[in-house]
Figure 1 (tube, rainbow, N blue to C red):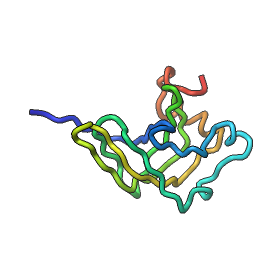
Figure 2 (cartoon, rainbow, N blue to C red):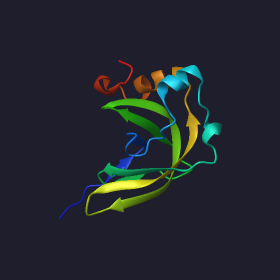
Figure 3 (cartoon, one colour):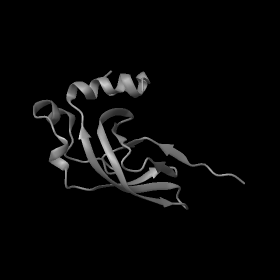
Length: 123
């Protein structure tokens, strides 16, 4: 008998899985988003493959948009709720944005945090 559970410090999701639709990198370049723009909003993500556990508030989790397998480190969130579908082995939940990185920090974050060149959206 065995089980496999991932413990994550990163919520890496696609638009289809619930990444906030208004966060678009080209719009962020023109007029930067701020965490205050989302302060009273709760977002939902769904059907993230595998059973995952995330850090609980007040510990931050990185918010990463997956765009065709390339990652954009947008900022930080608090995970508010997690639901596991044990039959389908997926994780869903709710989160709140607590910080949005500047465009410069978004571009730097990948090199500081991840460093896997094949996942870097900007290269």
